[in-house]
Image 1 (cartoon, rainbow, N blue to C red):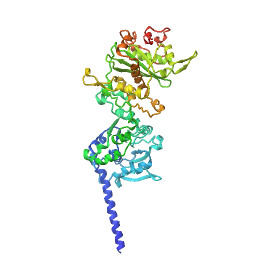
Image 2: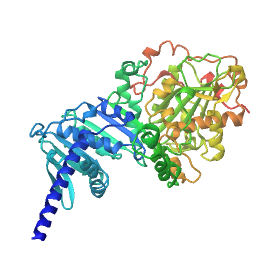
Image 3: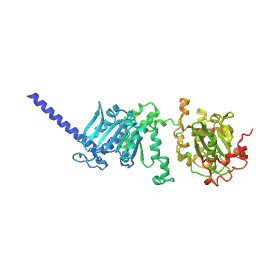
Image 4: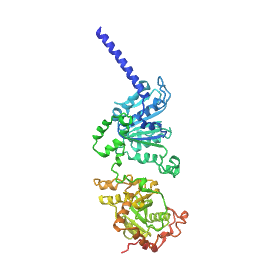
Length: 549
């Protein structure tokens, strides 16, 4: 009898505990309250949100609450929602959502599913669907469905999903994100990335975060460039809201968050790799943790576009490659021997006549010949087989009327990198007031270039431990090489303003009639040859570009 009564009491206790736990879970979602710095994550109306954050900053909780809100059609009380007595059935029939992470083992045991369970009430859902031992989906009482997928499944598994909303916990591969966004064209759906930016996530900076933080747009930020023009360069501009947070933002003692101050430092002190610690502590991109030129900033290194005075020497620096073409930057030197990059162009690889024609066209937009024209000697000495002989690129361009001198070649060693560092490091000049000015700066048009020189400096990495293949394999290296060749050539040949001016013969030589008739100039790719390239003898001005012995 006692045994039966005991079992009955245990059963009743279990029922009470179950009911209590159910009530707690139901109220967890209703009572969710974001820390103040997290509130803007929910309030932004942008269709794409990227939250780059350190560990334990609340990003996964944000993703879970945002996803549950979409699947039940109700926000927590703190975000303006009204919690119903019971969850409505069938109100979101046909709506499809996605939550994706790295592996099923991880999303089902460590990240997505455990976090969702913290906020799920039993009557919110109809059932979990499984494939083998892993949960692969959730059917909601509202009629909505949530698919759980992993990055290891590949982009084809995500194609055609037409999801109304998608949450990516940790950085997704670029092809998977693009596959989901293609499907969302039909649904006008939202996408959310919550990520600690470890290795392999750099594409988010280029495709999502940079467009989100572009302040040049007339419509979005009161800048000077029309919205449509920026969208041509950055298709996601105006669609992305990017947020950044660190572990310290979630400190209980200092910011009213959920983490104990001492526990934060215990965790961080256990991480020995400084780049990994920066990613986990501040949400810094680990891919760019060892940037060689991370200090190159717009406010210091970018100047407004301007027309250089005719007496400022103009130098053309070319880094050629058989497959990539010609990376060219034009620099001018002022009376204080400071340099500004005024124009940059990438001339696609092709026949020498066509490449020369395009170089001439771009010179015409400057309205004058360069006073010195240099080419990377490594690229310039590439061999080209012709009908008569084996010639190098210096000879082949000379045959097209373009004379180049060998530059001092860029060297990715301590010495070469240090010279360029010295040129880019701001120096205090008492005669100029309190501002520190670097020796080399860039006009704003180079900042606006898609994958241009400033873009390259933001990404270029160098380490003496890297293999030559890794150093030279960076596709943006050529822009950095142009700047490095300028610095090394000027230093080695002592190309001061006065010496360059003496070489000019008293002033810059204009291209006769070309600047004025720019609107009618033959553009690259036209069928007939530019008259400039039809000369059978060397033009007089070219004598100025020949090295003097």
